[in-house]
Image (cartoon, rainbow, N blue to C red):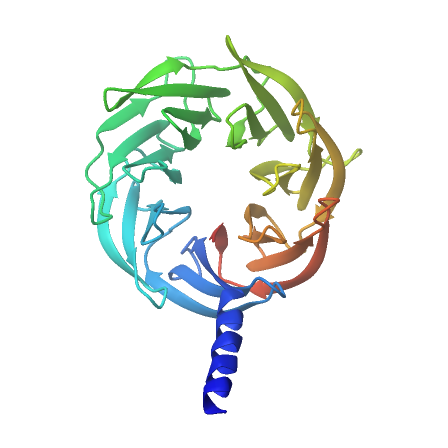
Length: 352
């Protein structure tokens, strides 16, 4: 009888544990925030709980995991610009491993290669991209390469960079371009400083590639649009452009973040100003988008958002109202339904 009770208790505890996922929150530390926070997220109910300070650190505005999830990396937009690496303890707390210069002012985005051996940092104010080797213990070496996108005619504002196999793509808001670098002999070399020709001043900010790398979805901060880019045998071409705002909205707005659903049938983009998540249905054959929803974020200035590991929930970091809003995702329709929110000081980045 006792054995049976122990088995039931074990199954129950395992089931409860399996419903909990850890969420890290990157913040600005200009006000009440002290650094990187951690929360528990219930993947069954969508509830957030147990807010704790994972580490005291200055302005950890963007976060990413190592592939084995033993280490975490952040940008730190203080004192000219740094990036940091951390070891993750069993309880989710962080210990600082290395803190190195970001090789440019205003680091705003950090990403890691799939093999975990290199990190890229985008410096918005400095207009540079820096590549850092990752040591076996998760710490960072000094930058091995620094690319300066500034030209005499125009200042660069590198906003994000994403690795894909042996490629590195960079969105430059200042130069209104998406760059393509290729890895050759352990070094990245520029292949194209404009994979497509942009018109006007759209302000490319963040982007996502499909799993097969055939399509790139680029959200533009100033033009409030999502540009759809298709890979071809000759390079890349723009095949679509869609507005993220509701018709008739004329007030100040800046787009911010973009994500693709787990099944790649839907695209989500954030509007700061209209304060909405724009939802698009994606044609999985030709890659084109059709807007189907504009969901209020129940807060102000949605700088970053994420989709939970199950693909059932979307969480939005509302910077100015200092809350994380949680939405359920309709699996079939892709649309969002607001559930609740949770107070967190100055949230600007969410990482599962």
